[in-house]
Structures are given as structure tokens and as C-alpha cells.
Length: 156
Image (cartoon, rainbow, N blue to C red):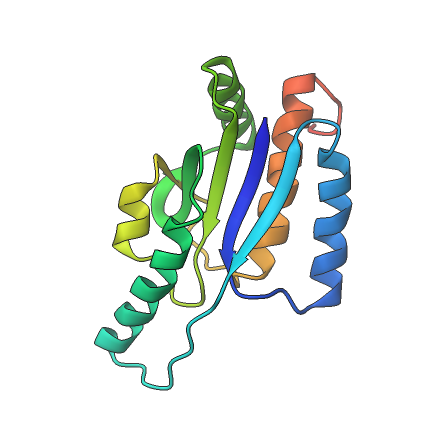
């Protein structure tokens, strides 16, 4: 199986890069893992219309990178436990899905177009995470999902 994260913007923080690299290395025994970054849209006008235009522009870039079964990270999505996420990925593999693509929006979130194009919306809770930090959290959760499927003690 291929596991991918499509996200907005370049990761700058060294500590986040190192954490993601560690989990990516661990994931290599289970799947081909990659992160695809699309360009971030910058906007000095914070009007609702301008911010929506930012999400639409970033969304077009994201949609062009979707592949396989797509899961959008969205505050309005469904909350799953780590075990439930593992079961979802396991079921996708059993159904023959060769690729699962997770989608992380930019600073202003995802456009409705992206959410509509995705097969599932996932919520990591009611709190807001910086879109850069959620990459690390998501990468760890993907790794955890594979470890749960394996029956490892990693998930206690």
C-alpha cells in the first residue's frame, strides 16, 4: 500500500522535519510513504471572500494531487480512535486500495471543493492544530495504525 500526505506549504521547522523523517523511516517497512507539498497562497486581506479565494486556489493544487482513497482532515469530519483508523486502513487494503491519500489544508483550512472530492473526512478533535504540526501528528497516527494492525505493543 502507498500512504501519502498532500499538504499546503513548505515545512520549515527542523524539529517537525526530524519527527516526520523518523516516522517515515519506520513506515517504510509497511508501505511506500510520501509527502506532497503544494504551494501556499498568501493573502494580506483577511476578508471572508479573500480567505475563501485562498482556499479555492490551494484546493485546486490539492485536487490535482489526489490519488486513490482520499481522506481530508477537517474539523467537521468524523472522529476516529487510533484503532478505528487502523481498521479503516486495513479494510481499504482488503478492498484492494493501493493508495490512501490524506489531505491537510493550509492556514485557512480546506475548500469545500477538496472536501467534496475526498472519500472521507477525518477530525483529530475540536482543537485547532497548526497545519505544520498536524503533519507530524498524522504521520505518527499512520504509523500507529500499521502497528495496531500488526498487533504490536506500540499502541497500548
